[in-house]
Structures are given as C-alpha cells and as structure tokens.
Image (cartoon, rainbow, N blue to C red; front, side):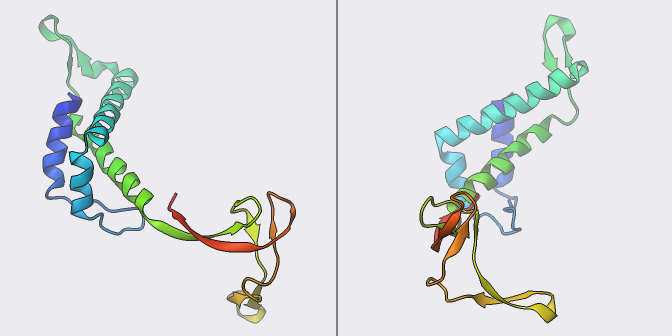
Length: 155
C-alpha cells in the first residue's frame, strides 16, 4: 500500500506547491531529485507504512477481513501520503543556511553579545558593541569568549 500511495502522491506533486516552514516554495527540481532518489523514496515509503500502521493500531475498525482477507478500508487512506510533503520540506531545509552566533571555544550557540539599544524605544536593537573585538559570554562554557558568526544548515 505504501508503494501505491507513494506513486499516487509523486504524480500529484508534479502539480502541487510544497512550501518550507518559512512559506517559500520548494523548487520543483529539488522535489524531483528527492522523488527520483532510491534512498529517499525508500524512506518516504517506510514513513507512509508507519503512518498507516499507527492508524490501524489506534483505530483497528479500518483493518477488516472481508472474505478472509485483511484490508485497510479507511476513507482517508490517501492522507497518509502527505508525510512525503513533510519529508521533502525537511530535506530542503537541510540545504538552506542560516547565520548564527557561536562560541569560539566550544562552537555552542548558547551565547550572549553586548549590543547598543535604544532604551526609550522599547530596547530596539541598534548594533553590536565593537563587533568582533568585544568579548561575549558563553552559557555552556560559563566564561567570557569571543563570539563569531557562522553559516550553518538550518535546523
């Protein structure tokens, strides 16, 4: 069943827009690349299978045995294929980069930096204090450290 649902959703994805969590459209060539990759396809089929299995476990009335054969008869069976959209979006987000501040000692992100703010305007951020020259604070190291920016895959 997961193979059939995978094939059906793959065909529909040719005419569907998949959005990332920021509301941006995932490029169709990226979607095609994921669908054509045997390892990604295998993973998505397994996720569909597990979604169906979880539904059958939670609500076994949809797993009947007419004429001695077991059959999954839920009216919303196709809905299980939408796990593919989430999978594709997750894979796409892994390719996207974001700028983060991190500790130069442990590379942790649990850091603080000094900043210029406008206290009479709701503490509106203006700029960093002496960018790169001023020590920051690392909560993980529990010490003053240099804090740098880094481009990392989006989580």
